[in-house]
Length: 113
Image 1 (cartoon, helix red, strand yellow):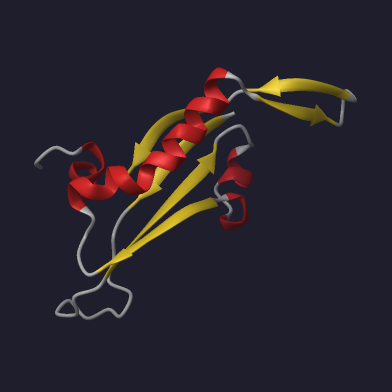
Image 2 (image 1 turned 90 degrees about the vertical axis):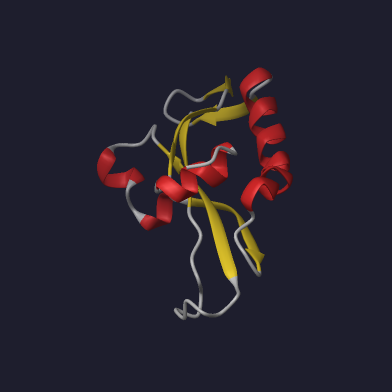
Protein backbone atom coordinates (compact mmCIF):
# COMPACT_ATOMS: atom_id res chain seq x y z
CA UNK A 1 0.00 0.00 0.00
CA UNK A 2 1.29 3.46 -0.88
CA UNK A 3 0.38 6.40 1.35
CA UNK A 4 0.72 10.16 1.24
CA UNK A 5 1.07 12.05 4.52
CA UNK A 6 -0.59 15.47 4.68
CA UNK A 7 -0.34 17.94 7.55
CA UNK A 8 -0.75 21.64 8.18
CA UNK A 9 -1.60 23.76 11.16
CA UNK A 10 -4.58 26.06 11.48
CA UNK A 11 -6.34 28.16 14.06
CA UNK A 12 -9.68 26.47 14.87
CA UNK A 13 -11.34 29.72 15.91
CA UNK A 14 -10.40 31.68 12.77
CA UNK A 15 -8.91 34.49 14.85
CA UNK A 16 -5.21 35.04 14.20
CA UNK A 17 -4.66 36.65 17.62
CA UNK A 18 -5.92 33.55 19.47
CA UNK A 19 -3.03 31.48 20.75
CA UNK A 20 -4.28 28.04 19.78
CA UNK A 21 -3.20 25.72 17.00
CA UNK A 22 -4.35 22.37 15.63
CA UNK A 23 -2.25 20.16 13.34
CA UNK A 24 -4.18 17.24 11.79
CA UNK A 25 -2.03 14.47 10.30
CA UNK A 26 -3.86 12.69 7.48
CA UNK A 27 -2.81 9.60 5.51
CA UNK A 28 -4.11 9.22 1.95
CA UNK A 29 -4.09 5.73 0.34
CA UNK A 30 -2.89 5.92 -3.27
CA UNK A 31 -3.62 2.30 -4.22
CA UNK A 32 -7.19 3.22 -5.05
CA UNK A 33 -8.43 4.78 -8.31
CA UNK A 34 -8.20 8.61 -8.33
CA UNK A 35 -11.96 9.08 -8.02
CA UNK A 36 -11.84 7.04 -4.79
CA UNK A 37 -8.67 8.13 -3.02
CA UNK A 38 -9.57 11.83 -3.28
CA UNK A 39 -12.88 11.29 -1.50
CA UNK A 40 -12.96 12.45 2.12
CA UNK A 41 -14.17 9.00 3.21
CA UNK A 42 -10.86 7.50 2.02
CA UNK A 43 -8.67 9.81 4.14
CA UNK A 44 -7.22 8.33 7.34
CA UNK A 45 -7.00 10.84 10.20
CA UNK A 46 -4.06 9.35 12.10
CA UNK A 47 -3.71 12.07 14.75
CA UNK A 48 -4.54 15.63 15.79
CA UNK A 49 -1.81 17.69 17.47
CA UNK A 50 -3.37 20.49 19.57
CA UNK A 51 -1.45 23.23 21.36
CA UNK A 52 -1.00 26.91 22.04
CA UNK A 53 1.50 27.20 19.17
CA UNK A 54 2.67 25.12 16.23
CA UNK A 55 4.60 22.02 17.39
CA UNK A 56 7.80 23.16 15.62
CA UNK A 57 10.69 20.73 16.08
CA UNK A 58 8.69 18.90 18.77
CA UNK A 59 6.48 17.40 16.06
CA UNK A 60 8.86 14.41 16.13
CA UNK A 61 7.52 13.47 19.57
CA UNK A 62 3.99 13.27 18.19
CA UNK A 63 4.94 11.51 14.96
CA UNK A 64 7.15 8.85 16.61
CA UNK A 65 4.34 6.28 17.25
CA UNK A 66 3.12 6.69 13.64
CA UNK A 67 6.65 6.33 12.28
CA UNK A 68 7.28 3.20 14.37
CA UNK A 69 4.04 1.63 13.14
CA UNK A 70 4.82 2.50 9.51
CA UNK A 71 8.32 1.00 9.85
CA UNK A 72 6.77 -2.20 11.21
CA UNK A 73 4.27 -2.31 8.35
CA UNK A 74 7.11 -1.79 5.84
CA UNK A 75 9.47 -4.41 7.32
CA UNK A 76 7.09 -7.18 8.46
CA UNK A 77 3.81 -6.31 6.77
CA UNK A 78 0.42 -7.45 7.96
CA UNK A 79 -1.70 -10.43 6.90
CA UNK A 80 -4.49 -9.18 4.63
CA UNK A 81 -7.38 -11.06 3.02
CA UNK A 82 -7.82 -10.54 -0.73
CA UNK A 83 -11.54 -11.22 -1.26
CA UNK A 84 -11.46 -11.37 -5.07
CA UNK A 85 -8.83 -14.10 -5.11
CA UNK A 86 -9.91 -15.59 -1.75
CA UNK A 87 -6.33 -15.65 -0.47
CA UNK A 88 -4.25 -14.13 2.31
CA UNK A 89 -1.09 -12.13 1.58
CA UNK A 90 1.41 -9.94 3.45
CA UNK A 91 0.60 -6.29 2.80
CA UNK A 92 3.46 -3.80 3.19
CA UNK A 93 3.05 -0.04 3.54
CA UNK A 94 5.25 2.82 2.28
CA UNK A 95 5.01 6.62 2.43
CA UNK A 96 5.34 8.01 -1.10
CA UNK A 97 5.44 11.71 -0.24
CA UNK A 98 4.28 14.38 2.16
CA UNK A 99 1.81 17.13 1.30
CA UNK A 100 2.29 20.47 3.09
CA UNK A 101 2.63 24.15 2.44
CA UNK A 102 6.11 25.69 2.65
CA UNK A 103 6.03 26.59 6.40
CA UNK A 104 4.53 23.14 7.13
CA UNK A 105 7.39 21.55 5.22
CA UNK A 106 9.83 23.31 7.53
CA UNK A 107 7.99 22.02 10.60
CA UNK A 108 7.68 18.49 9.28
CA UNK A 109 11.31 18.23 8.11
CA UNK A 110 12.86 20.14 11.00
CA UNK A 111 14.54 22.63 8.64
CA UNK A 112 14.29 26.41 8.68
CA UNK A 113 12.23 27.60 5.72
